[in-house]
Image (cartoon, rainbow, N blue to C red; front, side):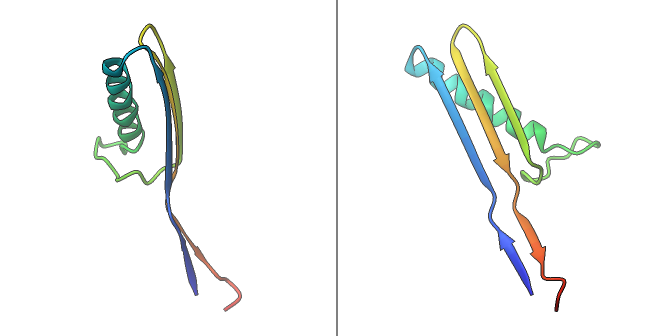
Length: 76
C-alpha cells in the first residue's frame, strides 16, 4: 500500500507598496523554481524541499516548499 502526501508551498512577503509586493512575489517564485532545477539545468516541477529568504529596500520575503512524497508500507 502506498500513501501519497501532497506538497505544500508557503510564501510570506512584506513590502512598502503594491508594486514592490508584486516584484517580491515574482522573485520568490523565481527562486523557488530555481531551487528545483537539477544539475543539468532542467526544472523538476518542485520536487525538492527548499527554503529561501531575501530582504532589501523593497521589503522581504521567505518561502518554504515541502515536496510531495509517496510513502510505502513496508509491512505488506
